[in-house]
Every structure is written in C-alpha cells, then in structure tokens.
Length: 207
Image (tube, rainbow, N blue to C red):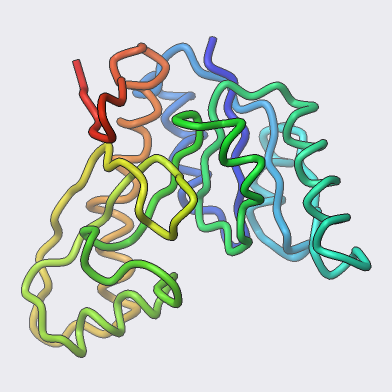
C-alpha cells in the first residue's frame, strides 16, 4: 500500500482528484495518510476532514525562524512515514534536506507544459495570465518529480489542453484543471503505486 501525504495551500481541487481516484479505483493500492497546509483557511483542510484524513496547518508565519518551521514541517511529514509526497498547489519552498531525503518520492503538479511558464513566480493564475498574454494556442499541465530547482525535476506526465478564443485566465485555469491536472496527477500516483515508474539518468521511464 502506497502511503501518500498531500501538501496544499488552497482549495485542494487536486487533493479532491486524488481522494476521488482512490475511492473509484483509478488510483490503486494507495492510502492518503495525511494532509498538511501552510494556510489554516485552506478549503483543502475541510476536504480532508470530510474524509477523516489526518490534517494540520503548519505555517512559516507561526515560527520565529525559517529553520524552526522547516524542522517542525519535516518532523510532521516524517511522522506520517510517507512513501510518496504530493505537492498539490503548495506555495512554500521545500527544505533542501527534505528534497534529498525524499528524492524521486516527491511529485508536483504544475499548470503548464514545462518548460513553458514555469519557475520562480509562475504559480496559480499567474501561469494562465502569462500564457494568454503570450498568445499560445496550447496550454496544459505537468507532473514532475521535485528536485532542488523550481519546476526542474524529471517530468513524469504531461497533457495538452486547447486555448480557446475569448479565454480568460480563470476560464483557462478551470479547463486545464478539468482536462489535464485532475487526470494526470491520479495517473502518476497510480503508476508509482504500481511500481511502474523509474528514473534513469534524470529521465522518467514508465513501464
């Protein structure tokens, strides 16, 4: 059984996609053992509570130093003994020590086709604003392993989504969620649970 901890800052729509995938069997052999948010008002915590998934808020704002937060945060994650950590819209820099400890066991969902519109400053609606401003015809989402860079880890899955005339950032964001994020994130977790993914020389191999 793959034990998953989900890290999230906001509404938790991708968390919901994982919950639904576990329930409907599209994510097999997987259990969500915990949810952590840096935002006490995140609706994701409510989603977790509904499913009786252990959930907590650990925010850098509540600590006198970043080192104190990092230690508390890592202790909380380690205490749940996850096989996989999923960043589902988590807007906090992951401590380097944690990245090293969970190498190729921590994944992130990003709302663009990496390497487009990614890296520092590209998150949430900002990604879709930039895509529309550039005039791209195709948007999408990427699931990748987390490394020390921002959106630079090995790519697991990508899915393209058409940009339509008259799209606003909000409309495009919703379409990318529905047609890409909520599909490829569960697929990636299922593949990891089924031990069908390996990383060879920085590239992901899916069996």
